[in-house]
Image 1 (spheres, helix red, strand yellow):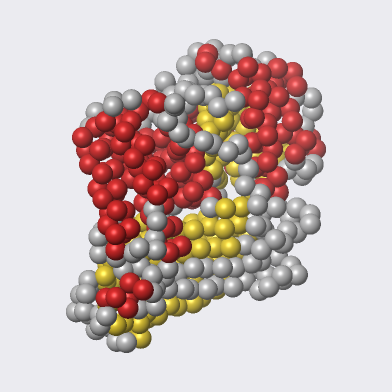
Image 2 (tube, rainbow, N blue to C red):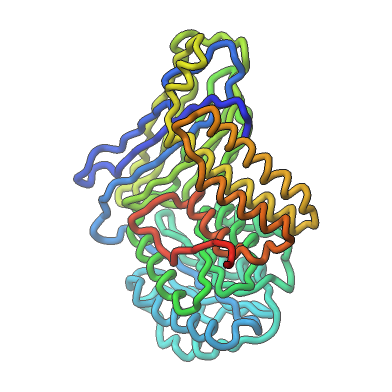
Length: 453
């Protein structure tokens, strides 16, 4: 995070239209009233999507679900038993018109229950009961087979989701992080998302995080197998309430302003343009994305200048109607640095810092795993210095929580005791922060990530 602080916030609000609530609304808002002219400004743009409380009252889209479950040797016992219970109960969460399949993977991949409409399914309990934990883990092959099952019932308006349950690292076939991310990206282009669930305490959190992020799905850590059914059923319930698909948020900066990076949710970016894609939209959602950009010094910026324009587009699931909302945002300039500082919005700056924490911690842990603890510490300490600088410059802004998160990781790496942090729970928490935002229907078990006493 750069020390030059020039913050721009575009906050986007909308609620579903035509369902008894306010028409979809797009609001762009600056985080400060004034920028200092003739300076190179670092800009942080936050785009926030809020959905209203409306749902259809009845499902309008088919759920096309593939359950992809780990049956490697490490699943023996309670984990496999709870997985079987989840599979039996999942059918009760679906309607007769939904499509359902079960794929399992160990040393090989097997289609235990081929994709069929629920109303056509016959007794599958014997198939579920026949699952036996043994062998290694061919996760990549399992994902490919689950996607093939989904393609059999994929429709223009269907919600296509792989529910992946994994308790360990892949041991056969695809194993590298980049390869899994590429595979998930290809599925996203087909409208297939992955709900990645890490069961127990030995799964690969980086792989599951990447699968969920690249496909537009979800990632959750479930340390207690007893909670597996609850997590899956709550997410199925949320999928039932989807009211829009193919949501795309496009942000374009005006000439003289260049994008540096995105914080949190991935995006397709060029110099001045960014596209954020969302699998589906649900009631009671609040989604946030943040961009960092640089405004060149000495540009032709007048007292009142347009900074960026944005559009939110999506397709309604009930009618197929394409919705597009457009807005732009302008900035004002002043000769007074003090005047500019006084106009800072604390909430927006803290949100940008929280996203920066998530990016920095994930990067540091990957460096640590690569045998580069000094570089990991450098990244963490650089971010901590930046936060302390912000606190010194802006007395009203306190970043105690963000600094505490950074300092816990610094302490763990310095003592070569990173294992005392529950990394799986932490990565799940950071994913919720940067990808899922806040939702009244947010599913899953709350994850805590602290140092052991």
